[in-house]
Image (cartoon, rainbow, N blue to C red; front, top):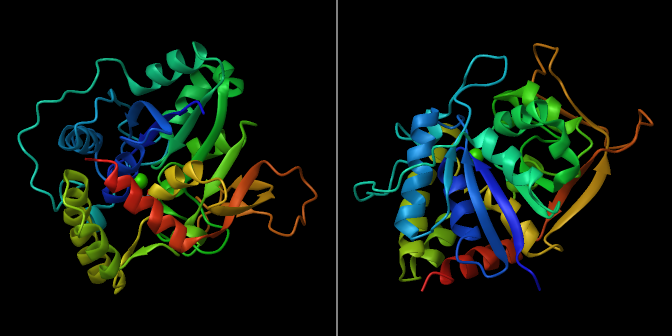
Length: 310
Ligand code: RIB
Ligand code: CA
């Protein structure tokens, strides 16, 4: 079976880092490139974080820095969860890897336009890079096989009662992407909140004596410390790797097609993914929304992903 070609667009971020780890060294996935966006931390930090993860794991994947701010709204970050660097916890060796010279948006456009339409985009941060690429070169839309994104929620948010961070951090870009007509799988909080990285999960992976096991453990011990401080939770939701896990096992998620629009107008619900769960609007569904996840299977996929690093 041909490996699945992917480009990960991310804002590392602890859970983004695990998504990069899970995709790396996996014979079923061809990581064409990693594009980076501002989100959990500023672009300079998320770029360094992506490079540090690739260097630590020995992943020879090109990293492209993208947009350092949202399309229209003011920039927001999530330092309270991911720490000052955006990837606090591990002690990385001096960084020798460098980002590519090409801008992430140009890389996305050039790569997709030259492709046979067989590349999946896996965004796990604000959608600024993807939205900008679609606006700059609309012809990429039919070239994208599918977008499997972490973001949104058909229930409640995590940065406001209504909105989830990735969408709210650049709701205009999310509007461009969700209204593009591209096939989309939305991996929202409704399922990612079911994969809490409890201390038992950390200890399970800590038993794997390789660089990936060590990186997972160092990252998740910090991540859980802040989740406890901020939310009072024993373990933080491992949001972003669910995107990768879902393409490795198509039966992992239960999805439901829903007409979904991004609220870019209101104040209270700004950045909400308005998913028409019951089809009230009689509008054509444009998103496959994840509504459930096989939690034990997810953790088995994470364990296997770590074991792939000899
Ligand atoms: O709301 C969770 C999402 O926001 C995750 O992708 C996390 O990394 C942050 O980007
Ligand atoms: Ca993220």
